[in-house]
Image 1 (cartoon, rainbow, N blue to C red):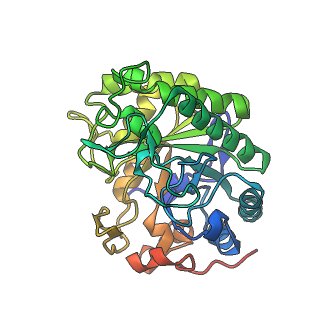
Image 2: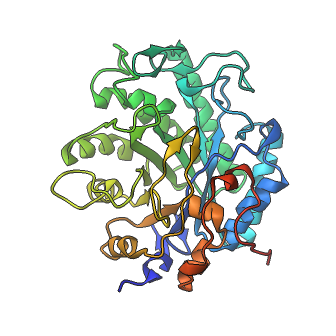
Image 3: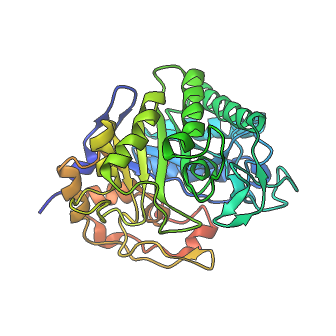
Length: 376
């Protein structure tokens, strides 16, 4: 029987060293009134670091662009107050021996009208399309593209300045960067549209600008997905060869680690191989990959009425351990199981799976849920 030891080996690449392989997945909590992380947010992240998470990737944080926000009480990653709040988070996580990266986010056409900051500003996107066949926002000009890229670069520089250990760029789930990737939301006829390589131009320019802003030695994580919140069956690529062609220019632009978002980590990505998306990405890019998708639960997530079904802890993590022992992917991100159990890594390491608390969707409405972990 494979053991949990594979999760707790130190991880090292040329730009990032971690005490173990457990990553906290980014999860929007909508708990920042005025878009500023407060002491509840500091404590929320501190508890997960104290519970044994090696790398925390924060909830999505919005860059400094008028249309970046799409939901209430989501934190900024700009402005003196928000950056001071994030600095307190960094200090608390570091004090517990953990490392942390902000997820930098622009929602694009998904923006809800009236959301602050930004007010009545429409959603910005490559072609003004929020979902296939629905034109509901502003089609970005070259000046708009340049502004957004500059906002991401500034946020990345600020993350480095306040002591973050890396940054993650949110290029998944049908938000702005992904809207450029996907042919159903990018119908442009200029250099940012057309084939996938051309639709990737926005992301390539953005990553290049971020790399210039943070220098050669600061880690850049890039999150991408096949599925979109607008369409779970969506796919950017259908073969390993297409995936390799997609990844190569992103890697060349400066990506160090890929975060490969799927709904079920155990499912193969392409016919003829058991490798999942993270496994293929690590194999083809030569970069470390983070696997994610219903880890530690007895069922995958189900979106219904803007919520999630309850899920009990999985008392068998053997499929995950087997994949990690085969070096399919280097890191694994845990989401809802960490909301329910701030000390999930410690309990897994001790073999206490039967003591893990069930995830309940009510836990999404509070930052205080999960097993208690006291400060050092």
